Amino acid sequence: MRKLILSGLLSLLLTGLAFPQDSTLFDDSRLSSIHITISPDSLKVIYDSILSDHYYLATFVFDDQIKRDTLKNVGFRLRGNSSRYSKKKSFKISFNEYVSGRKYQGVKKINLNGEHNDPTMIREKLFYDIWKKAGMVERRTAFVKLFINGSYYGLYTNLEEMEKEWLTRVYSKTSGNLFKCTFPADLVYHGPDQQIYKELQNTTVTGGRVYELQTNKSQDEYAGLVELITVLNQPSGGAFAAAIPAVLNVDHFLKALALDVATGNWDDYSYNNNNYYLYENPADSTFDFITYDPDNTFGIDWFGIDWAARDCRNWVNPNMTLPLAQKIMAVPAFFERYKQYLDTIVRNVTNPDSIFQHIDSMKQLIQQAAEEDTYRTLDYGYTVDDFNNGFIQSGADHVKYGIKPFLGKRRQTILVQLHPAGVLENTGMGQGISIFPNPASETLRVSLNVLPEQEIHAEIFDFSGMKVMEFDHRNPADGFSIRQLEPGIYFLRLSTSNKFYQAKFVKMQP
Image (tube, rainbow, N blue to C red):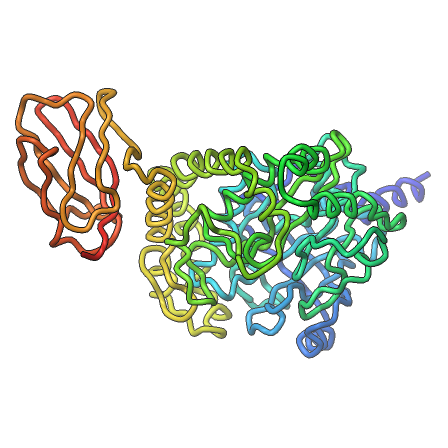
């Protein structure tokens, strides 16, 4: 009997069921640590064979500052595409690679991303936090410190693996096909044969299917995906608009696109035919569109494009064939819903009044771990000053904006583009204000629903909140000169003794 009890306890330990399932693994209010112990020879092979997806035997320890859990016989390997060539590597840990069926805190795998392109190392997590705040299906993320064989390898983003366990957590019905779509996943029609789409190979460094099935692999069924692509490649018009909702959750895609546009995520489907999942949801037999790998966001640029200023009404890359985005956006009703989603997101979700506080809390949490991370300095020479400045000012090379300036400018640019008539974001006592012309180059005029009898005090602020002009005015409808202002986006605030009015405008070059 004693042997049976000991055998049962050993079985529980091997399957991971002995560990509590309260999941501190993705608790982003704390900075946990992951310790990997691996043969030095295996670690050398991992670094020498950067394109290999072979898992090497390792021991995993998770320390959440309250308890330490140890799992032996886990799999450890590199992950990513171009990041495999970076000096600060990204890794994948598989809890069930050597112990079949084992999970840790409910998951079989986790991803550790080094964020070597980002001096702040928060962009990817920030996107997923915004994605969740907008009501989209959550992908859990948290910052962790990684140690390998006792040495500190730096600060990492711990990301939930998007597979069956993830589907079970975020969807009510999980039997559908989940496709991971990578460059060049353009959803262009190549005929009715499933095999054609199975044989399309991505051009990432690790290769593989463009449309890679993540669930139900033994069935290898692509009929639903082919049907979606077939409908997407119908001619534009009323027939397409009527047919597409039967195979695609249109609102889900429109909101996902709006989130990409609001955050400057250009390495997406709609600009770069890359980095998304499609889930064939059995609940309604339509596909959900899910963005992933959003590290090229919030001012990261490799093309010489100002993503903070790019027109939100013409985001889709005109040099590619992208039927999902191009056909959807060509339907007036869908386009109007997209603009409504985008307006709501920039007013409420990425509003600096709320998102800046969240950014500050993340920075405070990781500050010391980031400063001690010497691996993050190896690829672009990022210093501690680069880390701190990356939140508030532009940088060199591919980091064209600090995160906060990007969000401020992007939000204001979008509001101006969505509301060119100038009635933007009015505040104060229920009174409306409109500015014209908008954009303006020399003279700005103002119309108020109710013209106050008192003299009006006028102030102009730039997008960072700095006051750049101030004057008193009896009748703003007569207009006042803005010639001395630099081109850009500004706030105009008008106030009397008991009321105030505010709106945004764009100053153009005379």
